[in-house]
Every structure is written in C-alpha cells, then in structure tokens.
Image 1 (cartoon, rainbow, N blue to C red):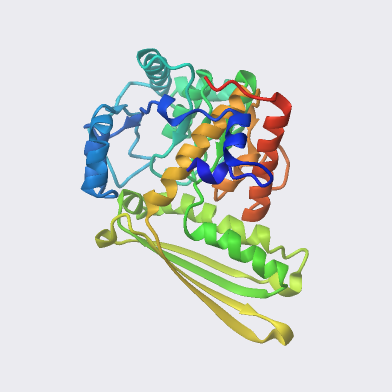
Image 2: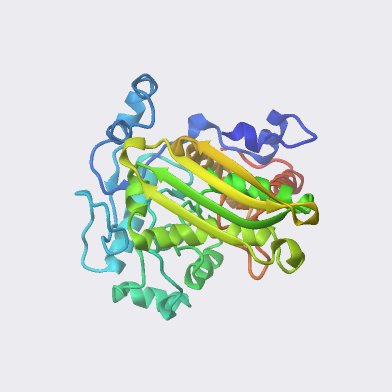
Length: 383
C-alpha cells in the first residue's frame, strides 16, 4: 500500500515516489519458502483470507509461485508441521542450502536485486546466549548445530551473507542478536524489525499518546484476542505465545513513562491474552479494557472491540517494507533501519538509541528519512 507511504506532506505523491526511486510493482517477482507444498494459489485457497473471485483474478500468477523447501525445526514452532522441509544434517548445511536457493532464484528470475520479509510463524521465546554474541561464535554454532540457533536466525544469516535486506515481521529473537548485526554491518545490508504492528498494538500506539498528551492517568490495560488461523494455532503453544506477549507488552510502558509522570503512570497493570478459536479463521477480534482516571482521580473506562482481518492488515506492510528496504539499500544504508519503526510492535533501535513506540513520532521519523533520501540522492535509480 504505497499510497500511504508516499503521501509525504508538502509534495505530490507521485513526485515523492519518483524522488526516492520506489520500484514499480510490475517489476517485482515473488518467491519464498514454505513447509507446505503446492503453489501460492493452493496456500491462498487453504488460508481462506481472500474470496475466490479475487483469488481467481490472480490465479495464473499465484500458481506460478511454488515454494522452495523450508528450514524448519519443530522444537521452535511446535503446533504445525509440513512435508516441504530440507532436513539436512547440520544448521551450517541448511544455511548453505538457503544461500544456494537465493542465488538460484535471483538467477532464474533474472533479478537485479532481492529483498526478504520474514512472514513465518512465531518461534518460541528465547534469550541471548554466548552463541549469539559474535559472528565467529555464531558460525561455529551453525557448524555444531547449536540448539540456541533458530530457523529464523539461519534464514537471516543466509540472506545477509547474500547481501539481501530483510525485515523481521515476527517477534522472534532474530536480527537483534549481536552476531547478525555484525554481519549486516560487515556486508553493508540494511534490515529492520520486529513483529508487524497491525491490529491491537496499532491502536495502542495511537491511544496511549492521546492519554499522555491530555495527562489522563492509566491504572490498567487488559487486552485479549481470539484468532483462528495458523498463526493463532502456533500461538496456542506457551513458548510461541511468550514471544508474542513480550512484543505486545512493550509499547504502553514506553509511551506512558512512569519516570516522567509517576502520579499518572507509575502503577500500570498491563495484561495480554491470545486464544486460539478456529471458527474465527483469519478474522481476528481484539477486546481492550482501559481503566483510566482524570481530574481529582475520578475513574473512567474505555472499551475497544476491534474486528479485523489479520492478513489484510499485514499484507500492505510486507510490500511497503520490501520496497522501502530496497530504496534504503540503493541509498547506501546498512544495519538497523530504525526509521521503519512505524511498521513494528517491538522496533529494533540503532545502537543505544531509545525505542520509539508512539505511532505519530514514528510516522514523522519515516517521512523525514524519505525526504532525506530525496534530498541526498536527487533521484535514485529506479531500475
């Protein structure tokens, strides 16, 4: 949905799009990996996100997209499995196989360059370990199939080694390990993450700044979701839910600072729940209850019921991130792209910079960076 990204105040949309050199949609080819076999059309029918009229309009294109065998480990994602898996002896061999896939895809599709967006399932929660602290330790861990290296880290390693920018759309510990930051900076590759900000957290990062601006106090924020698609099934596992919970909890405490306003935000109770409910499919429902207080401490409440379509909200973000990371790469950017925080629940900061969660501050940062690209380069090549 580039219409949202290129609507920079102060200039026509088309002029901004041209100035920063956004690739034309007709010049893009799509590919990827999946644990399930069959074409992208088969996957779309199985997912039941789009109606058949919309799917059939793109059937020829979707049937031509056949996923490559995936790197998958059921220890990291426990509630799903599939037949289209590489199943190699070591994680090092898997990384090499992914690099071959990337190189082969670029050659077969006659691409000038590539960008990757991680849209796979949420992995179980993990913490930084010694194997993640340096690139040498990480590569040694790949050769030894260290249990602390997840499939998403193997993908990220392979993509960065091949010079491919990547965005992490899941809450996994992946691009935020020092070893992969080191690799991205060595290879001069931009990346961004993590966890797409699509539904409930999007609203949180809109409402919380309004409470702060009007100095309205918050005692508690309770959030629950019902979701019936494969993402909901994966998140029914406590390990995967923990990764998502940590990501979803991060925004409120950052925006509503207890240090700045202890009398308003010093004792917030913040709860998040996700329940797998198969009848709902991709049509997620989020319920929020806010216990707030105003002048003289008088209590009030806010209730939100957000009936949304999970994949419909996420798909435009995937495209925006791919196009903007491509622009960043051609502009010579590398490492963490914190100006893309607008798209993420748990944005990865650059170095020791503070994490910004406020959607409006994130939007301003995004547009400032796009203006910088236009001014700095004059016009990026669009090929």
